[in-house]
Amino acid sequence: MAFFSTFDWIGDPVVVLRQFMAGLANGMLLFLVAAGLSLIFGISRVVNFAHGSIFMLGAYVAFTIVNLAGQSLLAFFLALVVSTSFTFLFGVVFEILFLRRIYRSPQALQLLVTFGLVLILGDAVRLIWGPEENSIVVPPNLDGVVHPFGVSFPVYRFALIAAGIAICIGLWSLLYRSRWGTLVRAATVDREMLQALGVDVRRLLTTVFGLGAGLAGLAGGLAAPIMSIGPGMHSQVLVDAFVIVVIGGMGSLPGALIGALVVGQANAFGTLAFPSFAIVIPFLVMTVLLIFRPRGLLGKPE
Amino acid sequence: MRAQITIGLVCAAVALVAPFTASEFWVFVFIEMLAFALYAVSFNLLLGYGGMLAFGHAVFFGVGAYAVAILMKKAGLDALCAILLAPLISAVAGAIIGYFCNRLSGIYLGMLTFAFQMLAYTVVLKSYSFTGGDDGLSGLKITGFAASPRGFYLVTLVVVAVALLLLWRLVHSPFGLALRAQRGNPNRSVALGINVSLHRWMTFVIAALFAGLAGGLFALANQSVFPGWLNWNATATPIVMAILGGMNSFFGPIIGSIIYVLMQTWLTGLTEYWALFLGTTIILIVMLLPNGVMSLWQGRKP
Image 1 (cartoon, each protein chain N blue to C red):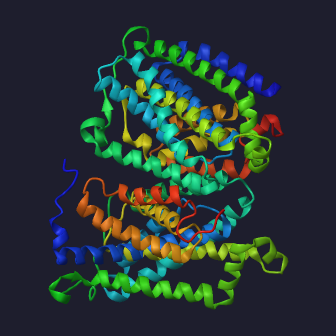
Image 2: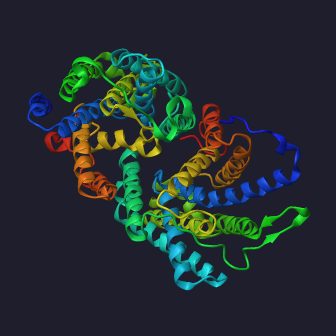
Image 3: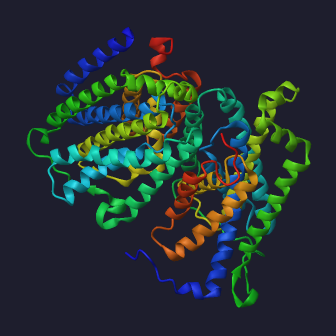
């Protein structure tokens, strides 16, 4: 077993650039998942263990829609819309039925409820879609390869990065330029005060959970053409999203972006440098960071 | 208090009589219950008594299990030496992890312990020559009195009973009172002269010691170890057991572990989709019985 691979690639700009772009695309996907996780934690102090499972649900829904609607760009967009709205609704219903009733309970109980959802969704997708690994192809018009600077990149990778940037801007304007976003940020600071001012905080919590779930579902749909869609796909995403949110600071959206870019690159270059221990590298970053700066890069002290 | 003693006596009576009337399959289930009961109580030292949501307690269980396996398979020790050394190795792991974690609080403590567990998981998975990687290590042979299932059951019963007695004395000692005091109000405890971080650190070491013992016993009962015991799914097992039974009492986690093992045994025999039912049960218990099954008897918090 090679602990270190050779480091020849460092001098090879083509490999470095290709790996950097792969890391960027991966980071953008992870940002969508982590942003929802972070938003939900910021406002409700709930660590949603099922966030990876909702991502998985999004991917499965996209798989079904693409299979029904056929291989076209339009069908893929439809799949994205359906998986986003389905997971949004799923999140809203779950929040109203379960989470809403236990916001005042100890954190361990909230964690356990979301963990129960992980178990249920894991088996539910096996029941509905079967235990095998599924896949969908990259939609036509996005399945090509481009050659900037003589380096070949899949077009879909650029599409992912572009979608990530667009959603990032959309999210930013939603949170910082709309009344709803102002209320969400206020609730993150002081929920009781906001309630006392006459805002329906319960509904706010529900919509934030729905938004977080919808973002995870959207990420699942976007990842469907490049990931193997199976019952085990939630765990790596969840673990990565946890690491991102802790690196960036729980509850901080810019923090989640920085964390996602760091983890995306750590995954991409870790695979090159330490093939068998690549999965540990994000954890090492997180562990070192937590020891010296427990609240993460941009988080507030608890 | 009276309810706790009654339950304790009933459990003791069942524990003494049951293995001699049941089949070997059920003897193994009883051994699993005993090991998990110790595991759950050791975890509750951190969660229930210390107020620390340690999210990676499985690391100590796993270190204990792998210590037994590696000492027996690679160092050629016999089972007795291995099971005596394993808790000490686990306690060292507890000292290291506790050193970094004892000053953190809330979700950040949980995240850092979780990170350590994932680190351990990856190291175990990738150090193939030493830990057997994916396959684990098997063929741990016990000789002498404990070689038969019922003999091993009796040994486990005595070991777990002594360990639980020690833990019972510990939580009712001045140390246990100080631990509960810092859970309620850390600042006031410091003002009263309690070295809060030292108490939290010591709790990590002690909880790791007993979790390691439980893991070692479980490894011997299975005659093998698997990396899945350290996986992120495994992290929820002690939490589920503690909360199922009730984290506000000493005996709660024991009841929880009995219910958990029974439910898992029954469901895995009944259906392939046992996780679906387990998840549903977890959510129902949290929603309907947030203080655990023990609250049915107690009706109040100790």
